[in-house]
Image (cartoon, rainbow, N blue to C red; front, side, top):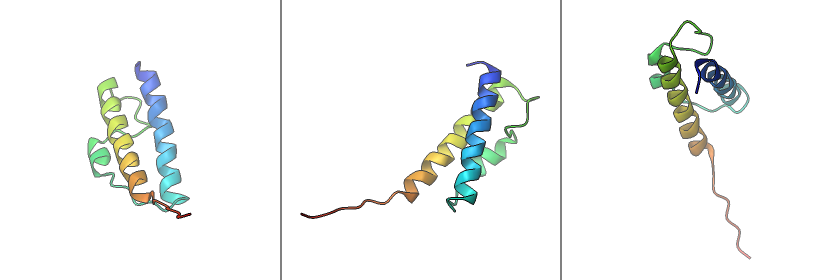
Length: 76
């Protein structure tokens, strides 16, 4: 994946993050992502830095969505 594509994906994931935090009231553990110091607007950062940030953000979003899911069972 090219750097431009990673930056674009990073921006899309950042939008999902904002939605989860504001609209869905999810609490996400973003410590790993934030410790990298590369946000979606940091176009001066390298490709590998954005790749690491994308993976860390995707992991936090996945874990946050797993916590939110509930299992509904019905008996007939």
